[in-house]
Image 1 (tube, one colour):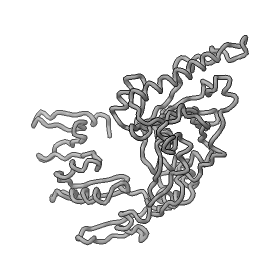
Image 2 (cartoon, helix red, strand yellow; image 1 turned 60 degrees about the vertical axis):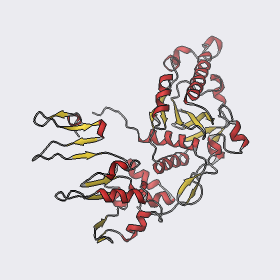
Image 3 (spheres, one colour; image 1 turned 135 degrees about the vertical axis):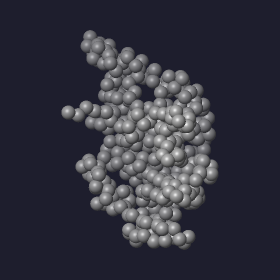
Image 4 (cartoon, helix red, strand yellow; image 1 turned 180 degrees about the horizontal axis):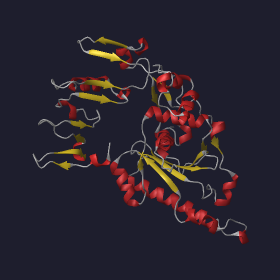
Length: 388
């Protein structure tokens, strides 16, 4: 969409205009023949917005996330303009075989057209491996081909199959849980300052509030080297803890640069990484109050890519390819209430109990959510480059 069309334009003729209006979450099209059409962008987490709408056409992406009740709401509001062709289009990623959409449309029967129980015309189009490759880059094709098990069935072959067992079956403590590297002793136990840092938050009050810090080593492996994992804290408490931990780390890195005479690194070689804490990304929940309060304290965040399935798949791939590691005992302080209740107190302790139950991931996932935000957001964020 041209950038010029994103601005609101006033029409001197009727006092109405066209373009995008943030307050309405709506793009208004220019008037034609005394009639104005519009495109409404909304989520079904607030179905009341739809209950009085008379819409012609509704398109829902990732419709596998809908409950059946939400589907019924959307279906009831589509095709309401009698003089304009319309309908409801649902775009699904495959889920479990018992999902309401698979039960209703029987995707294993393939492409077909029929009429439903109320006489509505239904067309089912099933995409398989050849369809997935039409617009895929060579890199994405290779990625799809590398998938295994139920992930391969779903995302490459388009089958509606169920998951079983542990969500992160590829997690192996012997491989992914590491001791703090001895070479970090040169920096007071922290990663070298020229390794890019990032952090990821999962907010919580009664549930644990989590912040994970990562450092990316030259090989590209991301190492989770510090964790805050605490219940019963406020956003102000969290912000203060983050600032304190990062200030201590920066002070240690600076103090480690005594120069060649002291047998330690020269600060001049690391000046660009020691002027401030070297944090290139800071992913978080989308809670605007917490994010705003943290921002005012000097802790900036970015809204994370939170889709559960693609996030789990991204973490699975990172574990399988050896691109992720966790420093043992990296948690700043064990939460007393969690210890008393014999519940996980850090990221590495959440893996074992996080399992597929009725085709949904269930279990303690506070730090695992923060991990998923980090890995999936890094993978899906846009890149900027210059091409000749």
